Image (cartoon, rainbow over all chains, first blue to last red; front, side, top):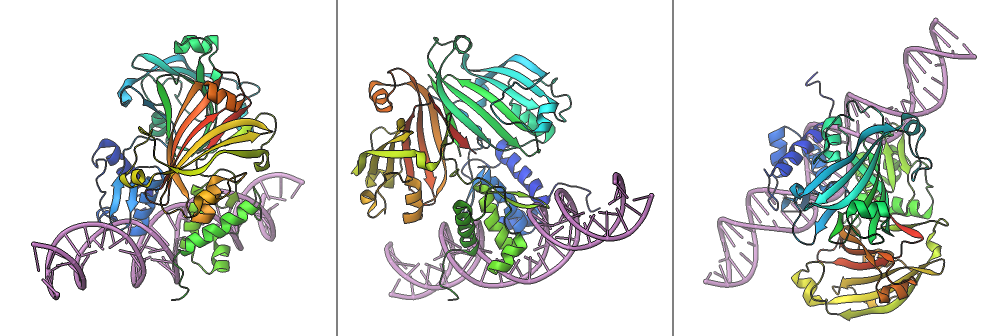
Length: 238
Length: 238
DNA sequence: AAATTTAACTTGTAAATACAAGTGCTAAAA
DNA sequence: TTTTAGCACTTGTATTTACAAGTTAAATTT
């Protein structure tokens, strides 16, 4: 019972470094401590340290260069989660406001559904919520989210105003996005969508159906997104 | 001079397994030989074998499961390269026909350009090509590609009809896509685009600007894509 | 002073080894 | 017959050690 901890060492180091990068302790463009330093400081061996660094590379937090070191990159991109790039100004997180149109509630899955659902997902029902998100006080996207109602205590009662759904899942439930699949289309805005996004009916709108895989088996997040791409673009790293 | 080979062992194994998965030797859903078997067969140690498998997981070719094995996944997705999902029928590679509108030719970069270019990219000029791609004999997307003219001998004279640009880069020049960034919009089809894609002017069209990073420093691939999403969707894994 | 070499760093690759933990089948027990 | 326990397999984590290769700057030579 050296420490009674079940989470692996390399993951602990990953979390520490991730936090430091996000908080700005290691600023963009600077070098992380060398692998040998990290070994010494944290009492680990190099393969273990490298395992943590590999994960940071995979998730886009650092970039390694042989002979030089590990360069810290700008932190934003959650894995594969598209972010917005604006035309007018750089969009910090502060500029994105969120309005909940439909608070999280338990509902049955729609039939038919865009993606195939497993048995356990089907019988559990889903947590349903709708949000409208604003940039510079203009509505930019409207999204519908469905999450299987599996072992997520107190989920419905949490506040999602101006918070990232994914940060809550990560911090409160240790749920991480591992990947996903999505379908994109350009469609004409229906009457409902056009009024929500404050654009004329029939204007082109980006339509996205996506399924996100998590580290919890059988727990996938399903989203439908309508995006007004007149002044902004969907921006993605991969 | 044991073998005079410079490419690392784990990469060789990666290539072997990748080829076998793509050629169907290991079919979708089946299990790869266990790590210990691979060690024995290829004369490697487990960390080295695991390095190859980690890369296969990263690129989406397999999915590992503790206690069970490495499950082969459907091969398609080049890393982050969006593929098409059709409404009518499953789209095999055979159904996608390519017409070259503008054969590869050396041109200067447009000014201004969507993405920032490095000095060496700028002075090298770019290889420019336009293609129109068909599904079931209907035009589905029109793409413009620009590649810096850096150390790509005989590139302009290669045939791109019905071949993947990326497969040629990979097989002939050992250039692999390592990642990228892209911007997406929904726009109204201009007169030119609508006539190319055989749709009414003003119909919604998916517009994509993308930059793909490769394993060769300073060699990025830039594409502009117009996609008719009436009958098909852009489909992506990440 | 300028060019070259060397040395001291960095990350990359690879081996040999050990035990932990999850899965699934088999054999023993109820 | 059903349940349980164990065993043999799988991948996951971790240590230790060694050398290769790229980068940078200091030291040496020209």
